[in-house]
Image (cartoon, rainbow, N blue to C red; front, side, top):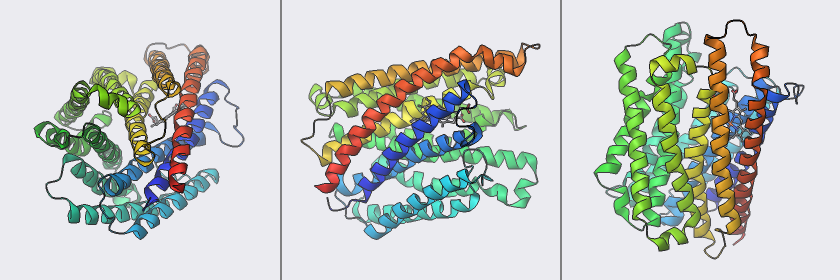
Length: 441
Ligand code: HEM
């Protein structure tokens, strides 16, 4: 291989996935045994360790995939290999910095970005280098961009802006005004997720177009409508996160309508692709096909859940319960992770065309993965309903009594979590081994 940096990104992403699911497993064990590892990493630290590591999995894998696709699949010479290497180095060092910041208790950042805020500077620098490399490479080589180039480019630019915006609270004029502070905070989180979704959904469309060997999958009215919908959602989708803030109701309804439509269109694009794919391509790219099919299923499940809990009267009861966690993990595992695993299986097939990567064992693991995720998701929903019932309808029960009542549900959550972790280990180890082999070839 001429350029190994994309593979470094992908191996780092899979390592983050492995580490991240263990943090998640330990956090879920702390639901059952609150004293587990409490002295070293209590729940309030375990949670950011888990969330930051799995978000890094999504971002590193999407980034590595984009670098790989433009250089190895499209064959464009990268504007600067040095910049890409520096980007990788900066992200790795910052990752170490984030762990040190958590371990030493320097967690002055806000939720989801809890590390010490100074570390955002190298992260932004990394994104800037990625942006320069991406646009300089693409502009020189492509005219009449298919939709995925727009999506990746938009994702990079918006990530730089919204990651900065998530730190506006450091400016006193934002921090000192409560409503402004919380509005900007949640707006930036919604847009931050929207930015990585642009990278991930762009990857899904790229894969569909390459597997089918049909560039029309990435052109035409439907996919560009999807792109503009995604962009609008990225800008306004935050509003359905802010039911507690006194904003104009129409803003929330519009935002909510857009995010639901975006998912429906995505489900439609993937479904049309699935039904139009030849049996030969399904067989050739078996794991890619299966994981994109799983993403389609999880888009559908999440639409149902989001439709329900975005209704203000229902949202009032679900806010702050495990139903929100079910939604976040349902989307980041069910949609983002499945698309990224599809991407990795595609990449491995490109770098090692002779490798056997659609064995019966992997297909069975895929089934266990989906079944575990479904049950894991149901356990979280059930815990959420119980907690909501306790918060609003059961006056006399203490918090500790409610937690005791949920004990069996937490055990079920943990057991289904183990199923998820084992299957993720199987996929990640298979993929890491193949990527390491590709590095040597
Ligand atoms: C690819 C795999 C995973 C991803 C992408 C992921 C993602 C996330 C995200 C985004 C959150 C934040 C939820 C929120 O604030 O609403 C979260 C929380 C959490 N996750 Fe995961 N997760 C993964 C795997 C797991 C596994 C395998 C387990 C357990 C076996 C687990 C257990 C937890 C727990 C206990 C929390 C904290 C919930 C709370 O605040 O009470 N996760 N995860």
